[in-house]
Image (tube, rainbow, N blue to C red; front, side):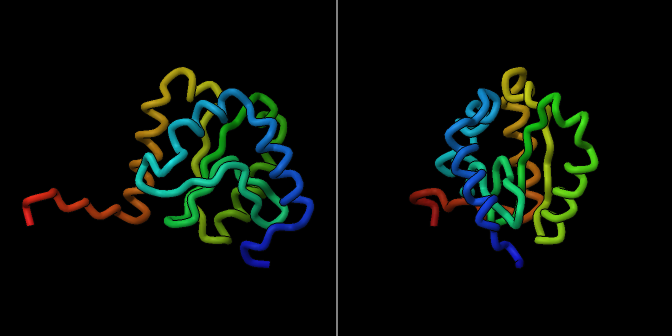
Length: 128
């Protein structure tokens, strides 16, 4: 079932996209539209899980963890292990970080993207 989403995960993803948290909306504002040079998907279903944000090339998942994640560390570890088996790298941030230092979060994501698959520099006009 490599990268195939279950029907339940697809349904949950639709619901989660409509009910994004404020932290998710804030981070999405910095990820959408290929602002970091790659395409991210929000609330992307993979297997029986839904990733907060997924970049399919290079393979990176970004998760925002609220206080409920303190009680579900085993579940999060299972999710991360599944995502890694599918070839994804996983980054986790506390849900308050997009509010406290959005630029730092985006820079950390950009750095990880660069380490996974360096983005080629665009040629400057007139300097060919």
